[in-house]
Image 1 (cartoon, rainbow, N blue to C red):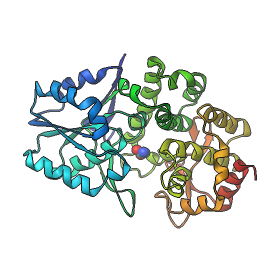
Image 2: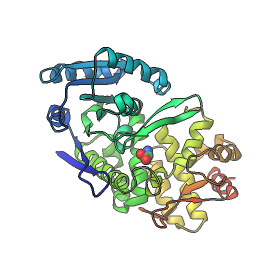
Image 3: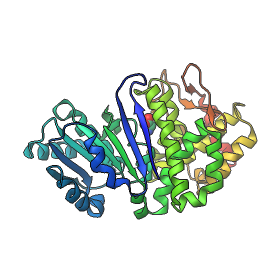
Image 4: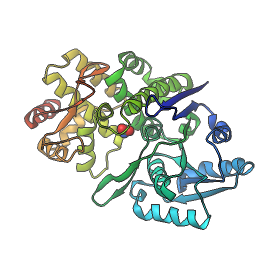
Length: 370
Ligand code: GLY
């Protein structure tokens, strides 16, 4: 099965890019490159671990049609840095890359963000095709054009919106991942379904074992729906002025957990615990009922994301860490609030609302059983 979703930016203009999704669809990359316009040279940029698995074959295949080079950098979040960006640029100059060079970002979110940002600034912007190899990067960072590096002042704090020319998602890449990494990504799909699509919340609940087992049809269906919803959000609000903030459901608390654990908790898991807290806040505010909250708790429990995890933290520490969230303004903590399963509070596309700190504390304490 091969699916194609088109992202149109802005929604009314002729500019759009395809997202190709399938099992084994990496074989379509050459054809996809043919659709992006004149290409003088191809640079596959990847981390050392992903490159070991997939780069040789790709370089060999693409070399038949284009001068193709491989650039790698060490894997890991700490390498999404200005230093590595500069090293990649240095190699690009040495290879005489020009404005018709096409970058292929082959890897997870770190690769996609770093390569996307390098492409955004090299000679004021060259084209990039995102080829995500993790479920998290398929469902999140490869779509929507957010690119960034980390600095000592924070994660993703320097970056640009730079839309890819195409995205190619081959679920075959997921076979090499441990189950923890599948769950890490799946939470992002659950998040977008909880805010936009009740039927798919039910589908996830009823098919969770098959999804985790990477059963092709159901997995492609879930990714296709989640990515289509994200594409819709990005078309409406590319620069995150309003609706795109809805993609941050579970993230205000999730980012706080990442911060206080010094990123020991994986992003998707942190968002999962964040969803529990932010759904409990919605329940305490009377926006959802107890049964709705229970649907969410039961679904996340199926992937071992349980409220007891929160017991190890001081609730106040979580709230203090939430004060630095990018969505905040006027020193108020802002949270995306669901008001049903598959729907969120939305006033004129504004979807993040101030919540009192004592309400957040109450929700966390309630989940901790205090
Ligand atoms: N990761 C959320 C977004 O792309 O806006």
